[in-house]
Length: 120
Image 1 (cartoon, rainbow, N blue to C red):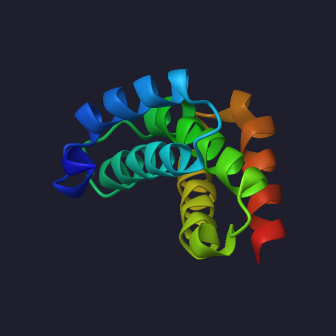
Image 2 (image 1 turned 180 degrees about the horizontal axis):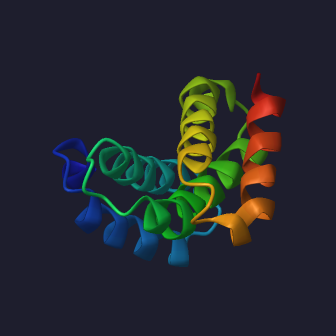
């Protein structure tokens, strides 16, 4: 939690991944892991020199996987739904900007779009 609180997301991911591997049902860890990946993805979306293809293909799906798990299993998924839907919207928007580069990932983006629509 300390690493996450102070923005050391890569190190926090290592910690949370170890925790999830031992305690697969610990929802708070899934949430924190997803939020770390989300923070890294958003940071890279906001930097013009980032490779957006890498963000959409490698980083964003990890955030989506973790946050989906949390949303599906939590008794209070609404506490993250707003931030998650904004993230999904951002992914879809970035995808539209680089659609030519990512033509082979249309199925991933359609799935993300569907998730976003179900949260609205």
